[in-house]
Each structure stands twice: as C-alpha cells, then as structure tokens.
Length: 450
Image (cartoon, rainbow, N blue to C red; front, top):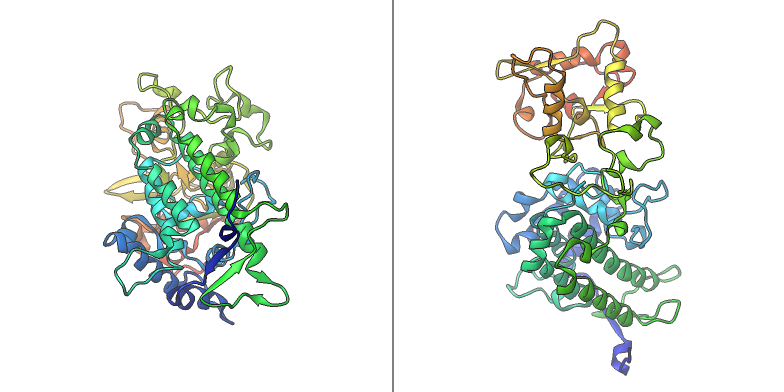
C-alpha cells in the first residue's frame, strides 16, 4: 500500500470532558468505588438512549458496570485480543472479547464464552449497538444534537461497518441456518479490529517516564509497529479481510462462509462438556457425543425439525443471573455439581421442596448454582423428569428454575425459602453447598455461617 506524506500522521483526540469526569475520574480515584459504578453506568445509559428511549433498560444490564470489569475495559493493556487466545486457558486472565457478552440481559451471568448455538442476529445487533455506544461515549457532545464525530474516525467507521453487516438480508438469512458460525466470525472481526487499536494505544499513549501524552487538542501517535508496518496498512488489510469474508460468494451456504473444522469448540459453552480432558472415560458413551464421522471437538449443528426429539442438541435457554446457591467444593462439570448437591445431603435427609401455586416443587440444581452451573435446557430437563417418573398417570411438575432477580423469586418472603434454608443448614450439606449473597439477603434472620 502506497502512503502519501499526510497519511503517515495518525491523530488522536483526547476523550471528551463528560467521559473524563464520569468514567475516568471515578476509576482513578484514590478510593475507587466498589461494586457497580453508578455514575459511569448512568452516563453510558444516556449515550445508549440517544438512539431510542429506554433502549438501555430494555436490552442491557447495569450489573455489567462493576468496578473490576470497568477497570479492565478502559485499560487496553489488560485486554486479551490476540488471535490465538483460548478462553478456557488458565493463562487467559485479561478481558477477552467474550467478556463483553454479559452486557446483554439474557447473558448477564454468562461465562466468557459464546453460547452453544451462538447469538441470534437480533441479539448481535443489540450487542453491536452497545459496542458502538461505549466507544462513542469517549467522543460525544450531549449538548449539541449532532452526529458524533467519532463515527467518522478510524475506529468508529469500522465499528459501523460491522454493525451494518447485520442489516444485510443475505446475512440475516444465513444467520438463521448457521448462527454459531456467523456469531464466531463476527466476534473474530471485532476482536481483530480492537487488537489493532490495542497495540497502537499500548505502544504510544503511555510513556513510563512521561505518563500520558497531554498535547491538546490532538496528539500525534507513532503509526508504525515494531516490524515497521504502518497502522493504516494494517487497517486496510482488516478492511479487505472483512469484505472478503462477508462477500456474496461466502453467504450462500454455511460451508462456504466458514469450514466446520475452523470453528473452535473451546470458544463455545458446550465445549466444557465435549472437549475437556478432565471428563471421565464414561463420558465417551454419552448420548451427547457427536455422531460417527464428525470430529468430537466441533459443536453440533441444529438438526432438521423432523428428527426425533432424542437427537435434539442441548440448548441452554435458561440462565440464572443470581442463583440461590454456591458450590463450596470443586466440581468439574454441571453433572458433577448436581451429584455434589445430592451426595452431600445427610443420610435420610429430604430434598427441599418449594410451594409454587399450591404445588410442592423440587429445585433444578443444575441451574441453581453460581456460574457456570447456572444454565439449563428446560426442554431436556422436563424430558428427563418424565423419564424418571414412576407414575406416568400423574403429570410431572417441572422443576423450579430460580433467578433471584426475576419474578416470582425476587418478591418471595423469607418464610417461602424455609425448606431450602433447612436443607442448607444440615451438616453434610453445609460442607459442600452454601447460600448465595442473593439468598442470604432474602433470609436476614438466618445466622448463616459463611
């Protein structure tokens, strides 16, 4: 790529006064706030709602703006946006691209992985709206009703490119057929873009002996990386890769868009059950293993609707944002968490039953614990109940799937939780399971020993 003399300069505007006051200053205070940073959350909410009243309250969760996550998000040096990152690796301690998913209400307690079948196109549009709003917030004028100047910047224009991809009819059509592939590739593009800017910022915005650059109103940053490649050339390569990946020739079939072997199973929630070496040998005979001829590390594709329900892949459609319980011992899989709950009970103890609409109902423990044991496939859950039902003539009462932030659970009085409290205070149970902070808040008269 040939560059004109003027192209060798890359100018960076400093953040707007609103961002510095309501985002940067609280995070850099001598005594930073704990928990959710309310002033920061309110500011981002204002920016998000510019494009639609109550948009933030409808689609996003304020719990995302916890001090720990915000400290990482505003500091590119703590990001892990490298191409070869493994979200399940113990060495992945920085903020990954999937660590931004909990901004969506549905995924507020989701691990830093993609959902089993990816996001829907509508969910991705909502997520992209937040990503654009977050970076816009650094360069926005809330007084003047004018388009944000950020939208024409090197980063802003490319975030808009990713957002506009989701409006194409051909993209929406293919998304219905291959949501997991489309989700992975879209996130891959966003990660690659942020990685370029992460490297640029990390190498130029801070000097150990001088601190942050203070020149106003613009600062000139060094556009060359250590290999001598110009930053604009790197952006041009990114543009070309996006145009090629999302071209019409790639959008006619899932296989043309992304070959199955290029879809890494470790980036999806289901990989915890399919590809971890810690699984016992018996897991190889599980009915959830891929069919013969398919590599075991690849996520299962959704089968045609005509296939029997027993071949339906697991779809975790329930995620508890605030479960009632926490594990006090290690458990390698969701199944292990359930076994721990049952085997920890004292001999002869009765499992807790809650009274819901006059019916005595047991709890779904596979979704009642802290992440990652806070999800459940409710269809599969009920089917398993029916299979274990010894009196088919009596209808099965579905298990309780508890999210302490949602009705009816968030408004239940303390007496409602008495059966669960009794169970948790049994000596054999207390050694393995303990109440979550949400449950303790609902039972203030109980002298919990935590």
